Image (cartoon, rainbow, N blue to C red; front, top):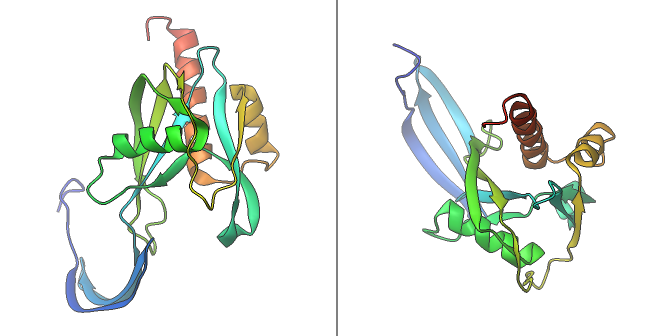
Length: 189
């Protein structure tokens, strides 16, 4: 079978262990491609959107907030869960407005990827926002958000020193650095 053909597991038995506001947990007995029989614990998540907001002068927007699972305040991109049936680009714009108080004139898709496919089906939709217009921020009642705009080099340094330790943010910074490198070598891009 070629690498481009999708193969799927066959679920023999399905058990929903937990269903909450953010996620669900399933334990499934499956037969995977290649005749592999296994029991898989899977966190089900409806997906998330994140935004690399880029000011006209090239600075990028980061937010810092406390994350209980990491028990730390983390610098990251504005991001959040998709509402039911919400398109990812709508969620991205909503999160940027709510958390930072910026409305993008342009949203460009940067990447779509699985956050942790070993045990979770969450898809992350990563966008680049430009043409930023100030609006009133509307953080959720349980969010305490610090907003900071930094140069791309400052963001890269924050990754190198471990000040940024969160995956989607690292990916976005890497992609933005690659983009700017390509633009400097080919001004037509």
